[in-house]
Length: 382
Image (cartoon, rainbow, N blue to C red):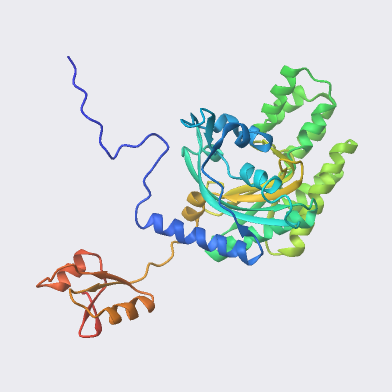
């Protein structure tokens, strides 16, 4: 007979974590900074629910992330519901229904938690993933693409994230090249995997007449001018050329708005852009191996053009410098409330005693306070 000890109450399912002090506070404060920047550019905040009926959440753009959704049955209606794996499809639904009559361009921002079945975004292990972002709905233009990128860059600058770069791509370009090759389904899949792995030898083996072009574009990924020059020099059919020109126009529009921003271009990147229909962008920072955010152009539920960018606060605040925490002041039992209020208004945190203590300095030190209040003064704790 075996005995299984009871599980620790601190044990959580894989991919879920408790966010403790000071990390929870840092993430909350940082998210509010992001939303403040978004709001300053006219992006109004919405808050979709965490749970929706499956047949509304996972249709249209949401269908592309259906395999990532947890499902459960509503005990009242007996209809299937799903936890959102991504907030952007919810914004698309809101724009097409509740806000279909709102003036365009429609600018919306959001922040909240998502839950995914498998591994998290960009190969991470999280299953509960925070998101904060913006969506610009209505216009389909390089200027709209550039606004989304420049607003995101301003938000990162406000947080002090170092070495930011934005990597732009056009995920429809490569499929448009491959569609005209007449490849079998198996060969097409093999070629797409080779491009995904940046395997030039395999591309040469399977790409047929497009091999030289695809290999040239593979090697062009990097600084924007270099990549765009390679696209200009490439022999592209009309559809692929149109995608290339739109990518180039969006890069130029970003440079007009944010001339100091570091831009890179990957002409053959298409991974993970499941419901996107145009120029896409991924955000990186020096010293971080994680994607800080990603976004791009897509269609709302009524096929209205839209573009946006979603940050991952968990990754973002690991890359940002930690903001200084305010001094903590210990208030001995019976400290005047007006004095305590003045201390808080001065930017400090107060920790009030709930009963008298003979040695308030020791109690202050135990509670991680830097000062103790005494006779209307703040005395530093040695």
